[in-house]
Image 1: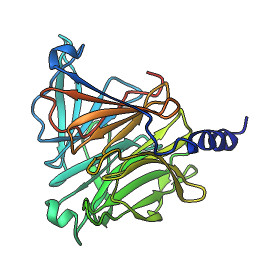
Image 2: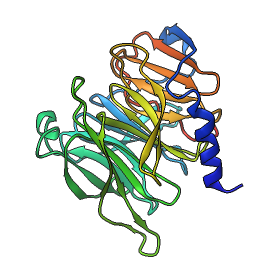
Image 3: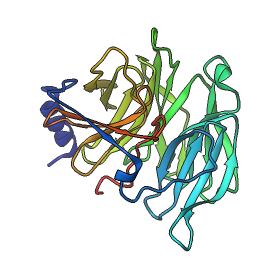
Length: 289
C-alpha cells in the first residue's frame, strides 16, 4: 500500500477520537517500584534526550547549554564519557541524515533566548569534538526532529500560557550534496510549539504545543490534526515519543509526570513517580521497543 494512503488512513481513523479521552487513570509509583531504574548525576536540569539507533550511546542536553555523551561503565552503570558546551541553554537534539547531531539551544540566558537574540541550531560530530552554528536568531527554539527523507524540522515558542505563540520550520535535506539548506517557516500561529518526534508507527511527524495539545503534522498541506487536547484548565505538553503499539508518551512539565495516551482506546494514563521531579523528555530507544 502506498505510504501516503497509509498516512491518510491513520489520520481518518484517529480524527474520530482526536483530542478526546474516554478513560483516564492515574498511577502513583515510588522509585522502588520502577524496575531497572538508574540515576546519573552531573547534569544541570536535563532537558532532552537522543538515543542513538546504531549504538548504546545516549545524548542529553541540559539547561546550562551543555551536551552530554552517556555510556555504560564496565559494571553496567551509566556514566558521562564526554561533554560539550555551546551556550547557556540546550533543548532538542536529533541525528541528521548526514550522520551529524543537530541540537537547538542558545548562547543567551532565558530572557534573551525568548526575545530578539533567540537561539540557534548547532551541528555537532557524534564524538563531541567540534560544533558549528548553522542558523541563529530563532526566538524560543525548542524541539527538533528528522523525517525518513532526512529533512529537519524545529519548533519555536514564547512559552507564555496566556498568549502562546510559536512556529514550525523545515530545513530541506539535499541527498545529492549530503547537506542541509536554509530553514523555511512552514507553519505559524501555533500555540508555543515545543516537542517534535517522527513516528515510524504512524509515518507522521508529531508535535506538542506547550499548554494545549499533541497533534499530527501534515507536512504536505502544512496543517495539523489534533490528537490529544488538554484535559484540565492548566496542563503541559513537552517532549513526545511513540512506542511500538502506537501509544503516545508525553512529558508533563506542569504536573511533573509522564503520561501515555492510546488513541484507539482513547485511554490516558498519568504516571506520577515520587521523587522524579519535573519531566522534560520521554524518549524511547526505537519505535519497535
